[in-house]
Image 1 (cartoon, rainbow, N blue to C red):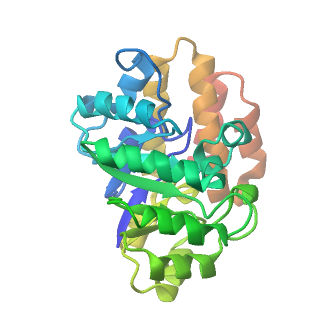
Image 2: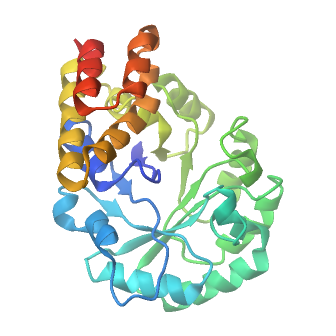
Length: 306
């Protein structure tokens, strides 16, 4: 089974990816949070930092673009190819209302005719391999029958399916029956994404879909960065490794952020997920959440990890 790291905006930055890849089981692919096309000649500083090879050493990184404008997508693809990227991922899964209202992300799925025209233009002109990360539709999983017919017309490198509709956001359970139907009808390599938080979750998925060969992990990895290793038969992550991992992230964010408060926000954001590893330490987790200085934060983390 291949395992990928899903893109989470503001979370899986190059700082996080680099630290993860250093301390935990390497993943087969890492996806960047999405780029939005713009008219500037090159990439801006933040975008460059995300995809510079020296910021992503030793990993197979796939940049992701979110757009409903084929020309804008292709311009951004060209900029990314200048850095050596041969595969680009199209985001058709983001459920954010601000995105969806502009018919971007999973909002683009609500206008299949426009989506078809977009894909025709992209695939007829692209010089890269284009994979797609998608939801099932906007309102109803039945929408995916038509959407998959459209995908099947094109040389999609890989189809990563999160089996929820946009209206679900991250509520309810993934629709595994709709995923089963998609897996049987797709003429494209398929990867599963959605609600894999434990080894038991992943093993249950494998039992339901023995033909599946790829899983994208998102919130499950952020909650427990040792999960991919456990899926490969490794022992649970040690507290010492977690400590080194978190120290590295804090160190790197302090180096690139103008103020310590910004670095503090980034690591506290991680603990909003990772706190689930320590359900018995709610009082100390609250100290992390309320910490107003790096020192307070470090003292609370030490209390948890020692």
